[in-house]
Image (cartoon, rainbow, N blue to C red; front, side, top):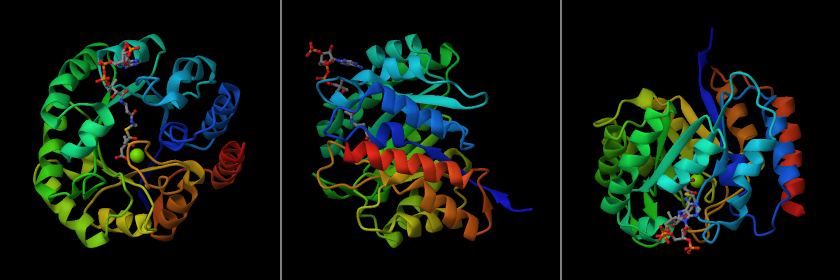
Length: 284
Ligand code: HMG
Ligand code: MG
């Protein structure tokens, strides 16, 4: 029997947040409803951030209200602060995520706070979410490279990953936000993080600007990671990481994992259908 690996679908959030055109809520819902048939256990569909900062995500509550929830699927939302958490609870998100950065420059550009300030802001969000029975995921952005500060030391990623673990995050997703991480540097970063957080509580989140995301997934598999974030159709980018491309495409990750002997439980026909929808949304 082959070993399991999981793809955490982030297309409806990370994929769409960067689209300049206001995508109709009905189209977002249709995409999520399609993805709900693909076999994912977790799909990130919403982001309760300031609509001034990320206008595309302003419809998150309507999206969560409109989707048909498939049994066994956890519909996740980003929550940068208490206001975001309150909105996520009201919209009945199944889990939430706090998102920090390994680099100061990106932390300030993305959430208008230093790393220390952001961790202080996340602490009540994480404890209130857990008190409400919601699992909390953590992201560390810029684990190898920052668009503002340049190369990031592996110890920086490890420190923030450890801090998010201490706040009660059940899993910490390591973000190559710029998608420029070379496999050797990703390996060195993972070695430092693994000193602090075990592999079964880590996920890899690779954008694919330099086309090396699949190699970085293989490096991560070699170090014991079994969860990878991906966006259907390779949609996206981060509005506060200039020049960064989309997440690695879900279909490509599913294919590579299968070729390496990992079972994802995903229906690749449905993923192909969702990728067509995602591309049509991008083209307007
Ligand atoms: P701030 O300006 O410091 O916050 O922004 P503030 O508390 O002073 O509030 C400013 C305004 O925002 C106020 O409104 C608040 O009401 C409003 P105004 O009086 O100006 O009209 N506000 C909110 N509105 C809705 N929902 C909220 C909320 N909070 C405040 N939750 C803040 C701080 C965090 C809010 C802002 O910086 C922000 O929204 N940043 C989000 C940026 C973002 O979403 N980036 C993309 C996601 S991260 C990512 O993509 C990386 C990841 O994929 C991993 C990887 O690839 O590395 C996860
Ligand atoms: Mg991302």
